[in-house]
Image 1 (cartoon, rainbow, N blue to C red):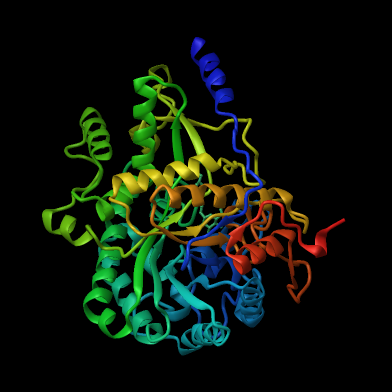
Image 2: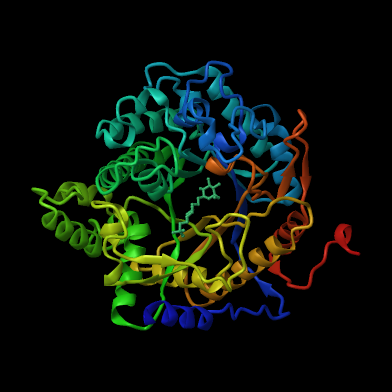
Length: 502
Ligand code: GBH
């Protein structure tokens, strides 16, 4: 009983102590800024010009009630038709690069590379050419969650053959776009694909076989990524001369108290959340992290499984995965508090990912809250992630491939401005302390389909009018702030854009 009280005390000690001084701070030479989107969230054109169906087309059409506002991405921001306006926006902001994703079923309607949809190739060629014409570098993500439905029928990411299918798809992308695309992400957020899609119902395909499916998926995603990386490295890099990596969602988990148990709970939570994918790629030793192997093996044995529910990586697989990324793509938004409490045993299903992790995760009500329930503004947590990556993985080049804030709408988004300024401020601290952070990418360019939350959460620097067929885009106040940061390559906490001054 004393436990919740103690936790609450700790919570208030963690109050946000961040104060931005009025100092103007400069970004290092060569630091680059961008904004990010993903295909299903903005494109629409869900059944046009030969595109095949994705698991999100199926999820939104078969049971609309799974989506908060019963919406779909059928039209979304209509970027399939309005991509020129998107590039114009990127130009207005002065972006160095634009991170977008390719819809696998738009290129390969059945998932396999025996049939290429030329209209899909044309669409991305047009987008890439339009970007280059405007001096904006295309940063292409191969997979941001819209798996061809035909491949899902075969098990999707839990079928090991997907490793080959993904590499075949990657080859089509290198062959068609690699002459102009020099920045690549293979896979966006493995944990969200595996845990949210296969270990729960949070994302398509909503398989919900927790404790088993997300770990099989993890192994396959890592191998698919690594093989696509090596294909580029060995056969394309010499001619195409690009940079290729993976984007991993990193939440900071802070111990809720100073006890040894709570510290271990926080470490376990970080290793389950992102170490599961980062350790095999970026650590010196490779392989899944110790905490993951130990927890899952112990529980599996207790539960009577003949072997660990976490598949093993063989020595040659460990070798293949280790070092298979030119940069660490960090998608980071928020921080959670973590504690361990034996009395809560039985709180989670057995087996399950949550039970394996055995950490209780809570938020601090004192932290500023976004429209998305999971998102609180905690700049010091972002700082700790950057320092931890430097420490654990020998200071790899880091690209922040996503960071952003949601509101319920409106153009005057002071809280988004505060969020970006505070996060960029600690990013500059981290750089001064030696972290090799080279790029920052805002999530997101324009309002979009926020997965199961439909259109109820707005992350855009530009507002999209979804009520009109024109899908007009209008800059928010934060767009003017971001534009000035990029123009001056400095963070000036007192800058006010004329258009929004009172
Ligand atoms: C990104 O994922 C996606 O790449 C993008 O498509 C999406 O639109 C954007 O976020 C905004 O949601 O801290 O334990 O409660 C972010 C994935 C989902 C990771 C929520 C952190 C909270 C887990 N994030 N999750 S917890």
